[in-house]
Image (cartoon, helix red, strand yellow):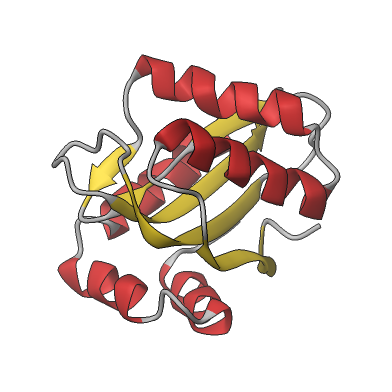
Length: 152
């Protein structure tokens, strides 16, 4: 399993407009694709959201969770058919979720490194524009993120 793979990009997903349903859908998509425990992943996403919102603003959220038994991080993207009320920092509906799923045992703090890389890019208006412009095209999203974010 590669850290970031085009097979972990899902476009135009219908989830309704509430964050709990969106998080459960994210968990189902990534659990099915990567052989993960959906219940544990949903719980992980919800636990992180209980701390504070992962809705960064500009229509983008970065939900993340740590999962037992995972040996390598999984990074994926989900675009929603309609915006989701994510309680984002700017109160804007979320159209794109960049999911980070990390091993529970992460001594090198990989999750913090990957999260900070995405957080920096989300302050770049051109990057946000390109994400939104390509939100219906999995391969274009993969190319954009793979070119802009260094995974190692």
